[in-house]
Length: 69
Image (cartoon, rainbow, N blue to C red; front, side, top):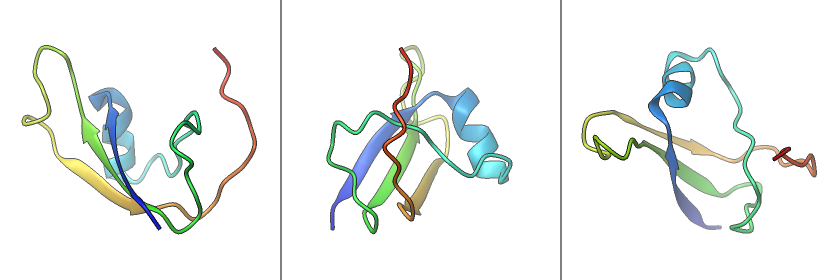
């Protein structure tokens, strides 16, 4: 199992923190696997990562759905 540190824009992190959004679709460029853990770090170029909270989770499902460009 691996741990992944991932950046996410705050407008997408806030619904995850509130429980409104329960999934994240990402390009599988890190060989994500069910059972891996991750941390989502809110990130904005101007602000950096310090201003916002982060979210820690575990991958419980993986699909071959492809994110559209």
